[in-house]
Amino acid sequence: MALKSTAFRPIRKAVLPAAGMGTRFLPATKASPKEMLPLVDKPLIQYVVEEAVACGITDIIIVTGRGKRAIEDHFDVSFELEMLLQDKGHDKAFEAVRAISDMANFAYIRQPQALGLGHAVGCARSLVGDEPFAVLLADDIIHHPTSALAQMLRVYEEFGTSVIGLQAVAPEEVVNYGVITPEKVRDGLHRVMDLVEKPKPADAPSNLSVIGRYILDPAIFNSLEQISRGAGGELQLTDAIRMMLQGRVVHGLELKGERYDAGSKLGFLKATVALAMDSPELGGEFRAFLHDLKL
Ligand code: G1P
Image (cartoon, rainbow, N blue to C red; front, side, top):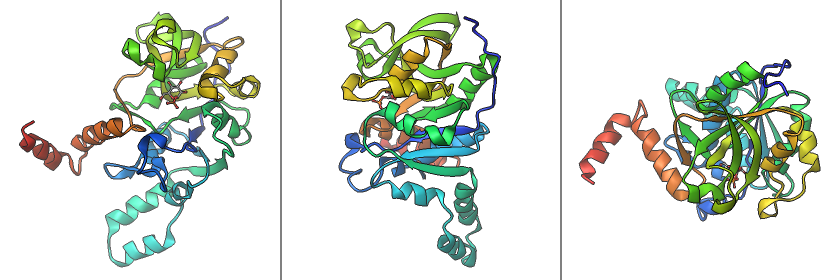
């Protein structure tokens, strides 16, 4: 099988699964979507939207569920707020608010039942159509000057294949991730020969774990329709990618940058500190505050 596909097409659409119940973050997420928790000064989901848009993506497809309406309101025009800010001369805040709804075309589709990540991505099929697309999981914050998706697009542009984001994790941690069987292409880049969702450490084929960034061939949708329930009784995206390996090449790129699991309380705190330290607006004072703590 040729490593390079001839069918290179630009990535215009991104799917953002956001239907999860946020159970790891209760009670904060009892009545508010996890994706709307503010990380420094923006809701979590805005980070992945901005990452996608900065990579040239024009269409953001958010897979939502019950109780997620605040996400739609956030990316919509807010006439009252914009008028109020203009009237009061708060130009900077006005620009920031206006920019959110101007960023991209936003479309929403419901995942009627929480049947897993694979099912959530499958729900977006009619909106994605027959073109390659990106999937970004808002929980995974990857802090690096070159965003995770931008790093992966370089590989996509080189090979024209599906690309999944990877990071090496401690052997005992593999149980939380999709894990690949790698065949090295070059430093940090692998061809994915197989993959398994949430293996026991003893069964893991490597410690190269899938991080929540994917560039996928639309063939994934046929695979998603054929898979059965996998790990945790859920329809797993990992299992559909595994099935797609029968006819398609998939690359895995080890992502540069510190990765935080912002879907967990501790990961969210770590991400908050890391991003606040680098914030142009708050970083100076925040670093001074941390320094004064004399830990
Ligand atoms: C999902 C994927 C898993 C991946 C992980 C990355 O798992 O199923 O393959 O490694 O995201 O964050 P989840 O965290 O939803 O259990």
